[in-house]
Amino acid sequence: MKEIKTIGVLTSGGDAPGMNACIRAVTRAAIYQGWKVMGIYRGYEGLIADDVKELTTESVSNTIQRGGTILKTARSAEFMTPEGKKKAYDTIVKHSIDALIVIGGNGSLSGAQDFAKMFDVPCIGLPGTIDNDLYGTDMTIGYDTALNTIVECVDKIRDTANSHDRIFLVECMGRDAGFLAQNSAIASGAEAAIIPEDRSNVDQLEKFIGRGIRKSKNSSIVIVSESPKDGKGAQYYADRVREEYPQYDVRVSILGHLQRGGTPTATDRILASRLGVAAIGALNEGQRNVMIGVSNDKIVYVPFSRAIKMDKPIDKELIDVLGILSI
Ligand code: F6P
Image 1 (spheres, rainbow, N blue to C red):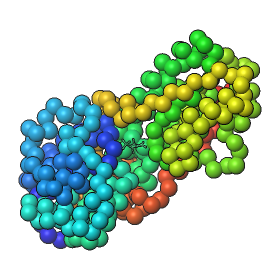
Image 2: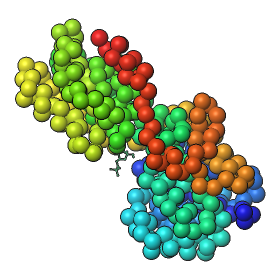
Image 3: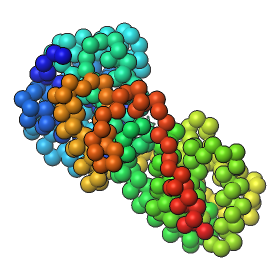
């Protein structure tokens, strides 16, 4: 394998708190190694457009505590095309970039995998998404912060739900994964979570109402995962409650993008720092086309194909915990 002297780093897809801590770790670990680091702005869009600037140890000072991403991010349609990838490769050649580190979610790592198939550029993926939906890592960068943000919001909603004796359907992000919904429901003491992973034929709303929760409690909170695939978000369930159970006073709260912002938790900062340093270690060992994750508190290398394609299951134990504790 070609000796590495220069690496490129980019963030792609939805931003996630902790991405800056990760850029910082990648940059400093690479410089520690004697390598040059090129920061690529706006994800793959910037790689195509040659929006590239060298990063120094100073460029990443005072960033570990900041949400968002100093490299900016984008979802690039052009990069999906062979022409887009060729333009991106031209930028890699122009700056003598020997390896690419991509911090992002599922779509971003799929992009890296396809790129590495077309061109001989070692790519390392780092899981950066609030959704926690990448297989092979216990947690993704940004997930813990988003989870804490949701819990903080639900605690506030609980006050008004209690005061008015209402059912609140709180919609959280997660795309097709219910980690944020399930775990925020446990942590906030919600009465139920409606998640896309529940593939039983049981109607989740009927199940919740049927348990007679309103008989013993004067208010209820149900966390609904956004579920873009079937469009059955909080509004869908609220409409059904109004029609099928008109005796209940129901409100919807869609948390939206506030879940993606804010200062990263210590857990996310530490995870991002470990993963960033491990990415440089992996390149040093000659690894390529793997995502770095943390499993059982140990650094692991997960081939892109597994990280992206395998479904990351929600532990049934978590579903049972919520069911038992919400009686
Ligand atoms: O993947 C992160 C995420 O926040 C998802 O939870 C959500 O479905 C999506 O991104 C929203 O994307 P955008 O910011 O492009 O609307």
